[in-house]
Length: 365
Image (cartoon, rainbow, N blue to C red; front, side):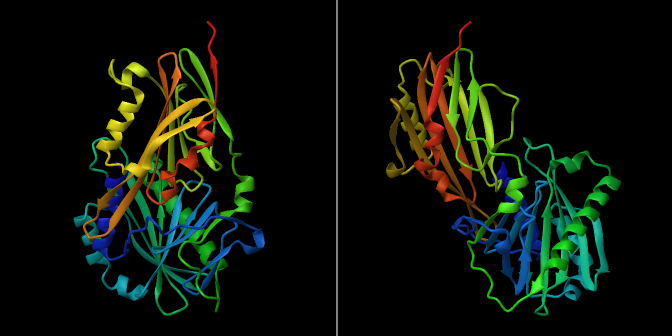
């Protein structure tokens, strides 16, 4: 579902001439926290302060900044000017409509703090029948220091569907203020642009963020299972006792842990290893990515694989996946499932060692 939405958005923006999308899967490779004084990136000859953002990534597709509101901002250099867009704005909006977008806010030109901007907003209703919300984005264009322009895109979450037109306009105005603050704080610099792959987890923002738990607990009808968690994951769903969904602080790695009935997964004469081997084969997992691991006397059967999603422009989006299963007794299976479109470490068994450290107690009725 996610791949389909991403593909539609990428394709539509490509038709509009506002974004180029490369492979992307291997762009981000280096991780680290920095001191507050070092929390900046240099891109397009501009030094951007990063202390107020939870995560900043430099990729082939520009700089991505994650806000504490859950929105993601993309800043991308384009070898075009504001006039290039403004002179053809009607044609570009028509192209967007042809690609399946609605114009939620018409292009507007304005000036703030002696800097020119153009802004507009788009809405795209998913054609995936399992998705009942729209994708919203606001786009701002502003000059850089090289005679070209910056393309800046803010992606919104599904809560925008619940807003009135006036409330969405207020949200767009608030987002515009974020971008103006970002640009006002940016400094022209002779420092070289940061290499693709630089990541900053903001020490300042993380101190103000919800504390990350190093363990969590699930409860089934007969078992209470406590397990560890990798650093930097937050639980996103508290509605179920026997399953839990987590996202990494970048929002780009998804982790799902559950307790499932043995009978719901396996046939009567099928072993857990046979079940895992069968699904590994169906998912085209390579032999070197399949195996078993013993942890505290319990055996986890696992496999990892990747899937390629081809875009209309010939580029590829890669999804990395990992799955592991452990028989915890009383007819129940403990499962680990993870996927990411950017982080290949998802396929590494070492990533989930903490998740495999189990403390299991029998529920007494």
